[in-house]
Image (cartoon, rainbow, N blue to C red):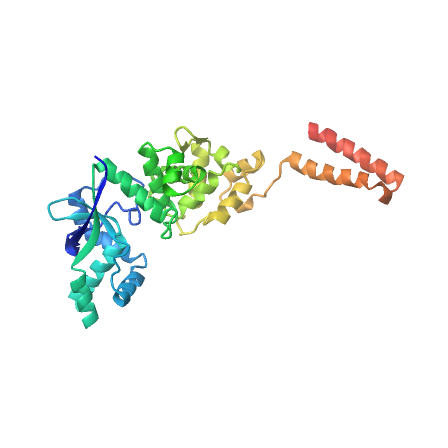
Length: 341
């Protein structure tokens, strides 16, 4: 049956925060949280959301009230309970305000009225099959948080793209649904798979951090050597060169002293610059610090630059003596021959 949307009012205490929400989930694993676990994790989810500038949202609600123009979206999961599909942060802010009020941390006539006004919250109830609701939820979150005003950054948006890809959507379809290009959708999906591969690594997985997603994207760039050096398998969507991959992992995770060899995107690009030649690749593999490896240009590139300069000089014959032109021509001939070897 097609998705059905209806207006409803739900008691705030009956709203369950989504443990698998892309904003709070820390794992690349697909959604597996059941209702029983979701109930148990409510305090933990609320604590996680409080770390994401929830205080600013709470202050805004206390000052301006809870605006219902942008309503939350829910699905029914039991006789009385509803899982929040969209609007987890706003619901968390309301629950946190109510918690502060009950504990006596905040008290005023305005707060008392807010507590009364938000005992029941206006919501959009989504009805349909599990797959239909998931498709609706993914599209809604994508429009709002991938290409919309309330953007998610980093791997959260990539996880949504990957989830849609796993559900059978093509990159073109995902791009159209989320308002991004198919190329961007593919880039995010591949970056997410590389990030997921890091998480699954038996040695380095437990050291995974959210900023590693952006760093690994640099190694997937088609115009850089990283993708080739790590042997990206497009069919399997994973890196295959284990020795080289281990070198990258060692560089991007914290060492025993809490330091990074590659901390950010700029460091990753410096690392990749050392991979432009076979000699540089070998040195990076042996070195404990890639910065000790000199950036080496391919011999043909160096020759091309020199030959180009010599050609320009020869063309400017008016500025040169006949003897100088002969010397330059001789040098040019020797270099051209060396380049061909």
